[in-house]
Amino acid sequence: WAPVLPDGPVRLRVTNTGTEAIAAGARLVAGWESSGEPYLRVAPADMAEVGEPLPALAPGESVTVDVVLPEPSAGGRALAWISLSTGAATFADAGSPALQLATGAP
Image (cartoon, rainbow, N blue to C red):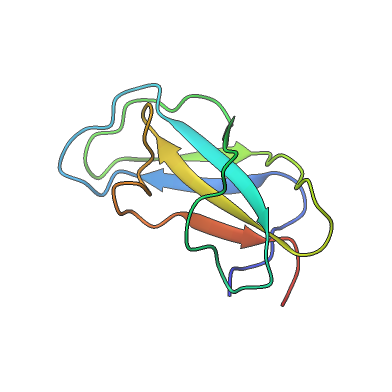
């Protein structure tokens, strides 16, 4: 089950675990979907950029960022899908699991 979203900004560490550099300007994106399931199988239809653009990250480098997620649009339990985007696609589209957080316990 996805962990419950903490109060306030979410502190995330983004680490380049790949073999190629991530160019400056990559953005975290997030979206919400109502669900009673443990996690989302696919990204929500509506995704929005969250936080500031990231600096370039060489393989093995990381950066810590604080992001404020948009409010979920529906009542009840919702799941946030958070991924890194370098343009039209996200890292989740390429097979890197998205971070998922829930508005409440199951």
